[in-house]
Length: 124
Image (cartoon, rainbow, N blue to C red; front, side):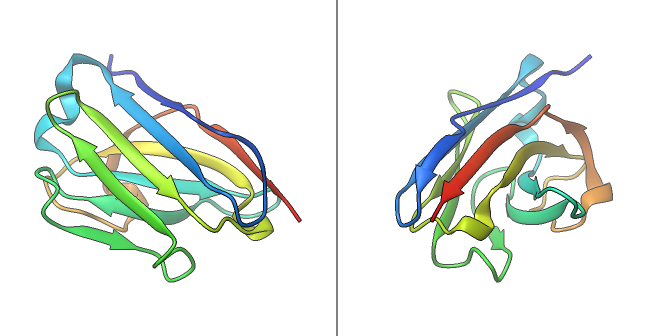
């Protein structure tokens, strides 16, 4: 069983930054695309950012483009999400996921393994 674990969430004021981290057990993610999704209270889970297996391709939702940066350290097997200029509407539980493919996918059902999520709260 693959375990995916997120960390780095917290409470910040609008305009500040947070950096999320994600690790997957058994080096499962080494040759797979990975992504970040989020779910706000009362809303459906939505795509945030994705990265290909080697970090060469990234994709972002329009709502975070220019403010968030996804990256990965393939030596340490860690996925990152640097979130800058946070807004109250970024408040959500953020989930890390490992894709079934090597590509950077925006489609939720492409992702096979999911973490339990980490809460990000942005106050105004």
